[in-house]
Length: 246
Length: 246
Image (cartoon, rainbow over all chains, first blue to last red; front, top):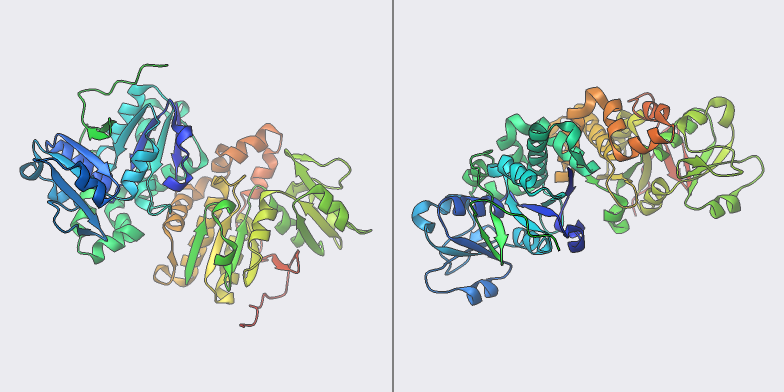
């Protein structure tokens, strides 16, 4: 099985994703939030890039969610903290979530056979889904404004390590960046929370009072669920079938 | 002290190097070869990108060196294996070396206050030179055709670790990619040779019969010398002064 890890969205080319599984990773915080919301019973999440687009898509009963500069958008129901997306807040609702990097990653990956949302919360489940889908796989680290973010790379390394544990080292081939991220994850695995606090986005979150979010995003393998993109909606499916071959 | 690690030449912008120290790293094999040749007494190395340029600059007494597709260029005196650049072969000579990625890295860095050549062979010496130069520092991983190469990232991590050992963790600030490379190096430090064999360029070298080169490039801190760029020549200086401020 071949797994390519891409360092940030700017390095990704849409056409390279054709016929592949793409796992989009934006640990702080878009994919951690999407996973948390869906586990807590929201029907679907529509990730959009702009506030305007979020308002356009809004229908009665929906929740509007998102942040700019770490703060909830004025008039929106929720920000972008996974801690806000409780069962009480989201069950049965459709959520329109506006984020920048995570959404761009999901849109960039749209030509893939399947687009999954990954974070530390579901690394093992992502590895299992990728194996079940039987395709070459790309782990797309969202990064921040086309710059590599450590937490996304560490999560890519975690997913790779779960693939190696499941299939054995001989059956996993990856690019040099993937090798680096796996090494980096193995080095940090016993102090993930502290490592996330030390990276650029971790520091930014702490300054804005979101240290609890970092703790929530650093939990590993708390769920066996993997959000999948279906017609612009991220949702949970009982199982994720590959699309039929052309 | 701020250290930025750049993943490959394509990500580097020349103007970002102004007033900084840049350490160019192309472990397999350009910078390992440049360091070895200078330690063994060659007068200077002129790194150039094309065979034509190498032949243009050639003067009687020079050595022409370089490779294409891992093989010595027809009619040249030397290839690009550090093992060839012995005292007997290079002492007192000027060498014109044509490589692709290493040379592009050095040229891209030319606006810097100082351009140094780094590899595992002189990581600690690079760290000490960067401290002595008292500038913000960029470690530019050459990579291969604008793609990240593991060995260069590991060496960047090694230089960072030497900086941390010298100044203490609190006095070294780095970008997320630097944090990742340091973690990756710490994970691999006790089996660098095996790790270099497992990466893309390591595999390519082995296939071409250059496994011995990988062993030579994986040796750490064998010299306290740091090649520095002076008027398009890489050379050793008794000490490396910063350029006067404007």
